[in-house]
Image (cartoon, rainbow, N blue to C red):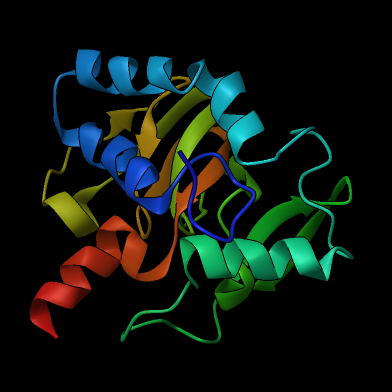
Length: 180
Protein backbone atom coordinates (compact mmCIF):
# COMPACT_ATOMS: atom_id res chain seq x y z
CA UNK A 1 0.00 0.00 0.00
CA UNK A 2 1.31 3.45 -0.83
CA UNK A 3 0.13 7.02 -0.88
CA UNK A 4 -1.30 7.99 -4.30
CA UNK A 5 1.34 9.85 -6.31
CA UNK A 6 4.11 8.60 -4.01
CA UNK A 7 6.75 5.98 -4.63
CA UNK A 8 6.92 5.08 -0.93
CA UNK A 9 5.42 1.74 0.07
CA UNK A 10 4.43 2.87 3.55
CA UNK A 11 1.93 5.59 4.48
CA UNK A 12 2.02 8.28 7.15
CA UNK A 13 -0.98 6.51 8.73
CA UNK A 14 1.01 3.26 9.01
CA UNK A 15 3.94 5.15 10.52
CA UNK A 16 1.55 6.86 12.98
CA UNK A 17 0.20 3.44 13.98
CA UNK A 18 3.76 2.32 14.69
CA UNK A 19 4.48 5.46 16.75
CA UNK A 20 1.22 5.05 18.68
CA UNK A 21 2.18 1.48 19.58
CA UNK A 22 4.72 3.00 21.99
CA UNK A 23 2.21 3.25 24.80
CA UNK A 24 0.92 -0.30 24.35
CA UNK A 25 2.23 -3.79 24.87
CA UNK A 26 5.60 -4.28 23.14
CA UNK A 27 4.05 -7.21 21.24
CA UNK A 28 1.84 -4.75 19.36
CA UNK A 29 4.90 -2.78 18.27
CA UNK A 30 6.65 -6.00 17.28
CA UNK A 31 3.60 -7.10 15.27
CA UNK A 32 3.50 -3.80 13.38
CA UNK A 33 7.27 -3.82 12.76
CA UNK A 34 7.04 -7.42 11.58
CA UNK A 35 4.33 -6.46 9.09
CA UNK A 36 6.85 -4.06 7.51
CA UNK A 37 9.69 -6.61 7.41
CA UNK A 38 11.26 -5.55 10.71
CA UNK A 39 13.54 -2.50 10.87
CA UNK A 40 15.35 -3.34 7.63
CA UNK A 41 12.06 -3.69 5.75
CA UNK A 42 10.77 -0.39 7.10
CA UNK A 43 14.00 1.33 6.06
CA UNK A 44 13.55 -0.08 2.53
CA UNK A 45 9.94 1.18 2.45
CA UNK A 46 11.24 4.61 3.48
CA UNK A 47 13.93 4.38 0.77
CA UNK A 48 16.77 4.64 3.27
CA UNK A 49 19.45 2.47 1.70
CA UNK A 50 22.35 3.18 4.06
CA UNK A 51 21.95 4.33 7.66
CA UNK A 52 25.61 5.41 7.74
CA UNK A 53 25.03 7.77 4.80
CA UNK A 54 21.53 9.03 5.60
CA UNK A 55 19.54 10.85 2.95
CA UNK A 56 21.03 12.57 -0.09
CA UNK A 57 21.01 16.30 0.67
CA UNK A 58 21.30 17.22 -3.01
CA UNK A 59 18.27 15.14 -4.08
CA UNK A 60 15.73 17.95 -3.65
CA UNK A 61 13.06 15.91 -5.48
CA UNK A 62 13.31 13.13 -2.88
CA UNK A 63 13.19 15.58 0.03
CA UNK A 64 10.17 17.34 -1.51
CA UNK A 65 8.39 14.00 -2.03
CA UNK A 66 9.01 13.10 1.61
CA UNK A 67 7.45 16.41 2.72
CA UNK A 68 4.51 15.92 0.37
CA UNK A 69 3.91 12.30 1.42
CA UNK A 70 4.60 12.43 5.16
CA UNK A 71 4.13 16.10 6.04
CA UNK A 72 6.34 18.99 7.04
CA UNK A 73 7.93 19.41 10.45
CA UNK A 74 5.71 22.29 11.51
CA UNK A 75 2.95 22.75 14.04
CA UNK A 76 1.70 25.85 15.81
CA UNK A 77 4.43 25.87 18.48
CA UNK A 78 7.39 24.97 16.26
CA UNK A 79 10.56 26.76 17.39
CA UNK A 80 11.81 28.04 14.03
CA UNK A 81 15.29 28.70 15.48
CA UNK A 82 15.79 25.10 16.61
CA UNK A 83 18.25 22.83 14.78
CA UNK A 84 18.11 19.07 14.17
CA UNK A 85 21.17 16.85 13.87
CA UNK A 86 20.96 14.45 10.92
CA UNK A 87 23.17 12.28 8.75
CA UNK A 88 23.05 13.41 5.14
CA UNK A 89 25.57 12.43 2.48
CA UNK A 90 27.46 10.50 5.18
CA UNK A 91 28.11 13.63 7.23
CA UNK A 92 26.61 14.84 10.48
CA UNK A 93 24.78 18.07 9.69
CA UNK A 94 22.79 20.58 11.67
CA UNK A 95 19.69 21.66 9.77
CA UNK A 96 16.74 23.90 10.64
CA UNK A 97 14.17 21.74 12.46
CA UNK A 98 11.57 22.53 9.76
CA UNK A 99 13.79 20.79 7.15
CA UNK A 100 13.68 17.45 9.01
CA UNK A 101 11.85 14.79 6.97
CA UNK A 102 10.61 11.25 7.49
CA UNK A 103 13.51 8.93 6.67
CA UNK A 104 16.19 11.21 8.10
CA UNK A 105 18.73 9.38 10.25
CA UNK A 106 19.44 11.22 13.50
CA UNK A 107 22.46 10.43 15.66
CA UNK A 108 21.54 10.78 19.34
CA UNK A 109 23.72 11.66 22.32
CA UNK A 110 23.35 13.01 25.82
CA UNK A 111 21.71 16.44 25.83
CA UNK A 112 19.91 16.05 22.50
CA UNK A 113 16.21 16.79 22.14
CA UNK A 114 14.50 14.26 19.87
CA UNK A 115 13.55 16.26 16.71
CA UNK A 116 10.65 14.07 15.47
CA UNK A 117 9.04 10.74 16.29
CA UNK A 118 11.49 7.98 15.51
CA UNK A 119 12.44 4.34 15.66
CA UNK A 120 15.67 3.44 17.46
CA UNK A 121 18.00 1.72 14.98
CA UNK A 122 21.10 1.82 17.22
CA UNK A 123 21.22 2.00 20.99
CA UNK A 124 24.11 2.12 23.43
CA UNK A 125 22.41 2.28 26.85
CA UNK A 126 20.03 4.93 25.45
CA UNK A 127 17.72 6.40 28.11
CA UNK A 128 15.19 9.12 27.42
CA UNK A 129 13.37 11.62 29.64
CA UNK A 130 9.79 11.51 28.35
CA UNK A 131 8.40 13.72 31.13
CA UNK A 132 7.73 16.70 28.82
CA UNK A 133 5.06 14.56 27.11
CA UNK A 134 4.06 11.89 29.62
CA UNK A 135 4.73 13.45 33.01
CA UNK A 136 6.57 10.24 33.97
CA UNK A 137 9.78 11.19 35.78
CA UNK A 138 11.66 7.88 35.41
CA UNK A 139 14.06 7.65 32.48
CA UNK A 140 12.92 5.19 29.80
CA UNK A 141 15.33 2.62 28.38
CA UNK A 142 15.25 2.62 24.56
CA UNK A 143 16.68 -0.51 22.94
CA UNK A 144 16.79 -1.03 19.18
CA UNK A 145 13.26 -1.13 17.78
CA UNK A 146 11.73 1.14 20.42
CA UNK A 147 9.74 4.26 19.58
CA UNK A 148 11.19 7.68 20.42
CA UNK A 149 8.91 10.68 20.76
CA UNK A 150 9.57 14.19 19.50
CA UNK A 151 10.53 16.80 22.08
CA UNK A 152 11.82 14.28 24.63
CA UNK A 153 15.42 14.37 25.84
CA UNK A 154 18.41 12.01 25.69
CA UNK A 155 19.78 11.75 29.24
CA UNK A 156 22.01 8.66 29.11
CA UNK A 157 23.78 6.79 26.32
CA UNK A 158 23.74 7.28 22.58
CA UNK A 159 22.18 5.84 19.46
CA UNK A 160 20.58 6.52 16.10
CA UNK A 161 16.99 6.78 15.01
CA UNK A 162 15.11 6.93 11.74
CA UNK A 163 12.45 9.65 11.71
CA UNK A 164 8.93 8.20 11.29
CA UNK A 165 6.77 11.22 12.15
CA UNK A 166 7.13 15.00 11.89
CA UNK A 167 5.00 18.06 12.54
CA UNK A 168 1.30 17.37 12.96
CA UNK A 169 2.01 13.71 12.19
CA UNK A 170 4.09 13.33 15.38
CA UNK A 171 2.95 12.75 18.97
CA UNK A 172 3.67 16.41 19.84
CA UNK A 173 1.80 17.57 16.74
CA UNK A 174 -1.21 15.44 17.70
CA UNK A 175 -1.25 16.97 21.18
CA UNK A 176 -0.84 20.44 19.69
CA UNK A 177 -3.82 19.83 17.38
CA UNK A 178 -6.00 18.95 20.37
CA UNK A 179 -5.32 22.33 21.97
CA UNK A 180 -5.42 24.49 18.83
